[in-house]
Image 1 (cartoon, rainbow, N blue to C red):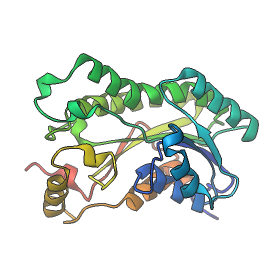
Image 2 (cartoon, rainbow, N blue to C red; image 1 turned 90 degrees about the vertical axis):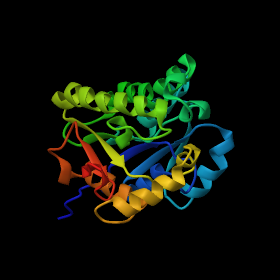
Image 3 (cartoon, rainbow, N blue to C red; image 1 turned 180 degrees about the horizontal axis):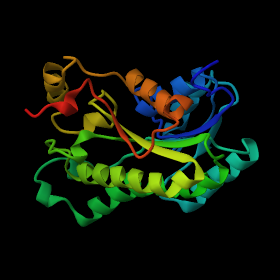
Length: 258
């Protein structure tokens, strides 16, 4: 018997922007293991790329969704209810901060920059979860998001996004407690640095990659595919007793003291 027990399940993947996206790596793994996907795209600027990336995946729903627009979120879940009937997995891979708030002095973070980062990177998870719950069957459903070690430790130039990731991890714990009685699991993956388009917006990212590879116990960087495989586990029946957890995929870097 397939221990993953994912074939025939459904998932909503939010956050694919291009082929380097961790969201894309997760979607690839889920699709390869028999999960039917719904994939959102933020706007028409990225729509063509998302269409191209998912073209070979049968019966995949492609839906526009600007996460600051409540009406668009409602429309996504209305389509999911009509097309899927139920939703087994919600994959939230969304984070955003203004470039000015990802560099310079931490104390210089703007009020609006703080609001933007927390709204898009954290509240969006709650907004999606609120709608997803009514579609999620007990003991067969999970919610997964992405975080980073800067939630707990100082990482140069991560600035406002570090605050957002700390809030996101706490949201995971509270959601896990809130949804546990409904049989819905909630977890986060804390990935090491990966060459994504958004990561390159962080000043000094190339040096961060170099130091990570030199110091991590496995003496290398991780790949988006490895994050995708961890997501596969957390969505599967193999992780049926796991919730409220931050699961590290960082070649062991998080255990180091220096």
